[in-house]
Amino acid sequence: MEQRYATHPDQIAGMDTQDLRDTYLLEQVFVPGEVTLVYTHHDRIVLGGAVPAGAELALPTYDEIRSEFFLEHREVGIVNVGQAGTVTADGQTFTMPKGACLYLGRGTRDVVFSDGPDSDGGAQFYLFSAPAHTTYPSTLVLPGEGNRRELGDPLTSNRRTLNQYIHENGVRSCQIVMGVTELHPGSMWNTMPAHTHDRRTECYLYFDVPSDARVVHLCGQPDHTRHLVVADRQAVISPSWSVHSGVGTASYSFIWAMAGENQAFDDMDTFPVTDMR
Image (cartoon, rainbow, N blue to C red; front, side, top):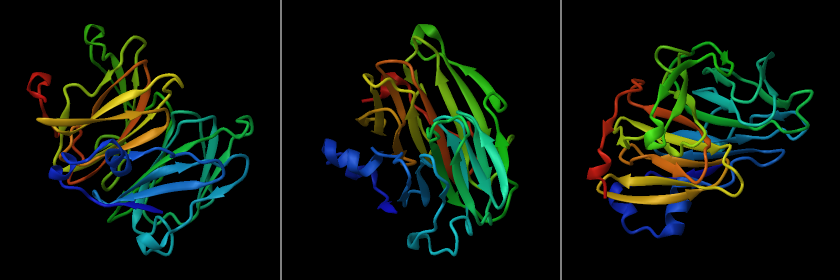
């Protein structure tokens, strides 16, 4: 398990492009036949991918988390961004089409990822995990079943559908807040106005980005922004003090997931774009 240490906002000013990418960008999230995870010391989040590639793939444990099994002291949200697949948790099997979200609570011992019968080895599971102090029941949310919010405007190129899956009024968790946002055709801007929330770390996984397109992800403090150029199925770690917003050269989707002090989705500090630098 790769480790990424927490950073102070003053550090980002001296980073060059490669420093920024090495610190905040996960370039290879999905590796066929592997579980690939990164431990960030920002709110002790673990994120990454699992790709069964035609075989059963078990979620291992790691020395870095000092647990007998991965979810002994943790919870996890899982979203399938590939073809249909299944997740079996302590003998209970959940069928997950693309876009489905599964929550597994603390204490779940055995987790196995598999492709669906017609997926041709194409299931890709994104994992977002945080420490948990109690157990909530495992819950599957199929695409379209979460709380849907229509946001933005075509005139500002940010018309989007936000699907809330794991949140305080939906699937219950200790810390995780998680969902999927789909930009409408012709819209490229996400998460405007840009904001921070000093009480939570947020991570983005960009997917359904065309191979010849990219997303320019803004990060840093509002008065001293930096950027990352992000490709399909790459993830960004956004510390609580950093803005997180982006614009693509084409429409795309992204998974947003947070953990930290509270689960209030609208607890954020927004910054007018006219005040950003």
